[in-house]
Image (cartoon, rainbow, N blue to C red; front, side, top):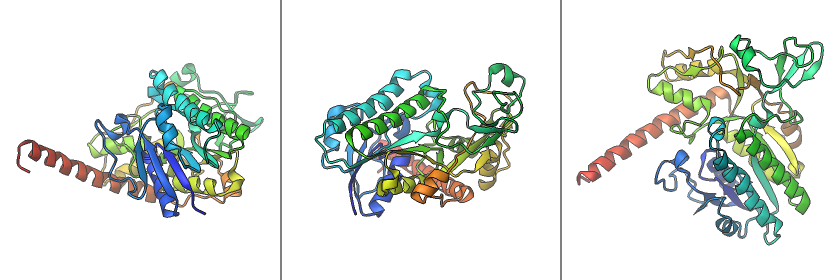
Length: 373
């Protein structure tokens, strides 16, 4: 069965891949995107990678009137539009709340009005809302420690301790049932987005799904945005001959998942009624030490640059968080299909092509300015 789908933020990194997956499945797709300069550059036009079979509408989710027009004739909504970045959210608070909370409230008010044909809605939630991941204590069982204190970090005591007995705690996969302990405005807005969507969905009988993305990487990831993912930041530094900066001892872990798998998970959640009104982790379930990520990217580039292990810390950083993927596997039959090694090779190859295109376009602009083309 084909649907008329709206993808907010559909010209972005993740949204554009969801668009591709929907088009491939025979669905009619409309993209609604503001082309944020931080992501797309100043004076950005519709990106060349955007699927030509999708309808593109430039607009902002904070503009309720424009969003209402974009919702016309839509049956499924993928709400991907959001301001992204943990650090930036801590000083541009109104910007994040406006884009993420108010933007989502505009969408939901339009759906609460009832004058629409939307049968299902999905929202991009985030693992950042967990704060620290889940841990196991030999004596106390599963525990959820709070963030490490500055006093602990100053002693370079990097690992977590059981909040009950104080003994060493071992990281374990983080399930959807773990309490959410937000430690940034960004995380809080993502938590709000998922809770608002599920609440309004249940109230008005519109099946809703929240997908908690872990660390997403892949082609089309912004390499110029300082608030992009750590893999892209490391890659950008290595390409420019600079050592990747790694905090603490480099053994903190994250769960990396290819954007292709994220797109597949979204389409599965749309298709399966078992997803309705549920929250799912979307990750690989594999913890990768941050130090090893930098080393692997350097090897793939053929570079001998080693990461700079600073043994310093950033306030608010979590030590370990990786996904328990058993729920999405059981209910939706989803398992990641792209290995981390293959996915990183794809990202690096894409970055090389993107760099070549940028250089060509810059040369063309210079020639044009001189009246030579």
